[in-house]
Image (cartoon, rainbow, N blue to C red; front, top):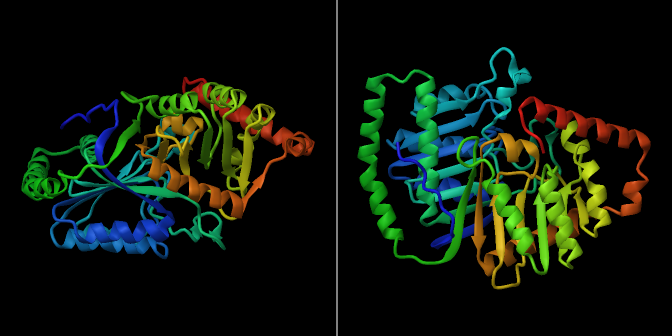
Length: 409
């Protein structure tokens, strides 16, 4: 199986569309699935067939029924065993489904099970890529909290260009590694390779049709536990260090390590306006309380923190110097917390394009104005002692858990 190419400079042949929420993401994804000629590769942390999520499942089944090779990988924690009747329906339609790192009887008591598949990627016919933070999960439904009054806030991108092959190779490699673990027989492997050869002509034709386009500079950043351990964190650190006017980060689970905290503080000290749009609603104990101990030093340095309260914030995006020639933006699955930066498989697309950066910035500013509440430094310092105790307990548990895995943060 081919090893994914390691890119260091953004290629300039990309067409990239920003998609906000499932109301924009699902229609585009389903349309491309319905037009698929050879194969669909889909990886997601959560695959939930409630409400509009069922439309994605139906699109996968339609594709498989007409002979398209469909590979679906879901995470063993985020999804687990897919609920019936959907599991049976997908398999009977010909969708090939695998669960990444099923929990087993001991569940998350085993630290090795903390390494999750958190990236959200879909490649269609080897020439179209979707990447972002959006799961196959209706924006008005939460598995733990039920119906939502306002849609979940999240983003994805639709990409055409050379980085698509890198994503496809990476997904194919993971698929076959998982198949090997589940005792691949030689006959099955031969059949699968035959499927791949039969699909290659259609994929090549589609790529040739798109190869003449030139457009945005973009780069795919992966994080895993072998070759790409720190690529996403390094990209953030480099962009923040080079910022001249403005850094805007929207992040669902924000517990940055020492390097990222220092980078943000130094940027603020040299006059860069740093704005953070973070989760303002209580979702999980660890996510809510472990983040707060890091706010003090950031607020003291002049970093602006806004808590998004309109609904659950699930975005993992950032924009640096959107109105300058060297504008930088990223959309992906990686939170700025230890689970994403030290343990999980993640994927982000970095875009070096002023128009794209300005579009993403405008969406973030609109969300900040409509649903964000500025966190006042005095209010933060005066929060109740019980809340501060819970914050410290959560932060301590997180650090202890990382120690168990052999990581420091």
